[in-house]
Length: 103
Image 1 (cartoon, rainbow, N blue to C red):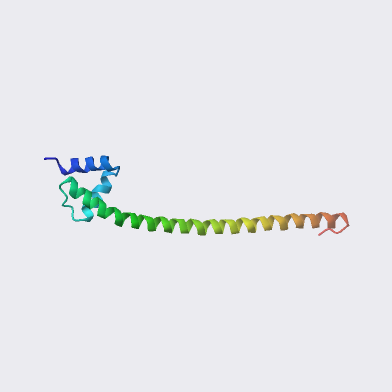
Image 2 (spheres, helix red, strand yellow; image 1 turned 120 degrees about the vertical axis):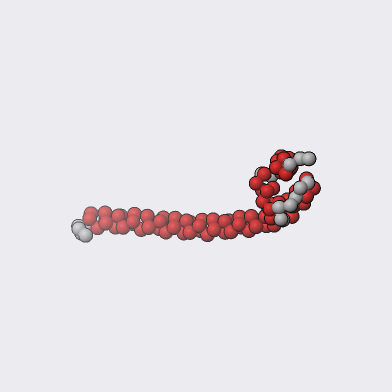
């Protein structure tokens, strides 16, 4: 009889999952899978739940990234405006010095 660890390793290699994910799937459904079919069953049920959870996390991360990108763009626009104002102030100062004011 093949050991549970060997079955987990074999299923992981067959399906391209990590052994840890397969162990989590088995544990999530009581930890009593002892055949390849039972491990596949646990993995299929767990995958749906886990994928939904991970997709929600990814959606949250994408939302946070979008908010940060908007904030960065806003700051870049403000920075550009400040540079323009500084340049204009320097030009005014230069002109005023040429006409005789020393402010």
